[in-house]
Image 1 (cartoon, helix red, strand yellow):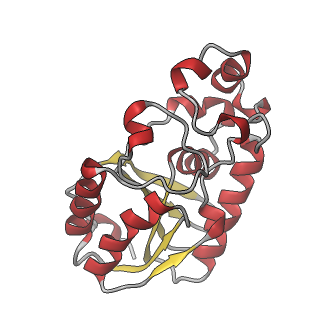
Image 2: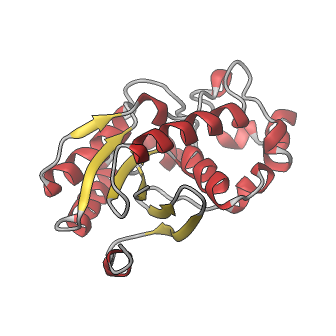
Length: 209
């Protein structure tokens, strides 16, 4: 399988203000988020990336477009990279949600947690991993494949591929405009970068192709 370049979308007003956007439509990058997307595009320009995939949500597409343009590639939408379905939590303040029992379950036992009216983290993880494995199967060993999506799905993918229990998910960082790099094979996987900001050097990956 290829190297999976997992990119979190840029900042928007929901992330800036600490609110749960979930799958709400019309959540666009703010000025800082657009700057982050452009910085990612410049940092990845000339990198041997073979394809760019994106969650269909606006904030991910708006991050993926300048990256794809810099690389001379189209943006391919992948529904399986969609943000976690947070159900009744959509639009709510994280500060207020943190006072609820359900939120404490998410922090202490993510493997048992389900968003009220939405997905469990185990369901979301299975969806994202299946999508990434499907994407990987379309590309050659050693290819770099960019996937632009969301924080929790990226962290779930990392946890799966490196064998980290889902209950340790809160220990993984994934900031807006960051890149996480996984080398995924049929029998093993390695986490090469986590939560990195531009500039990037893919030379070490290419030397192992």
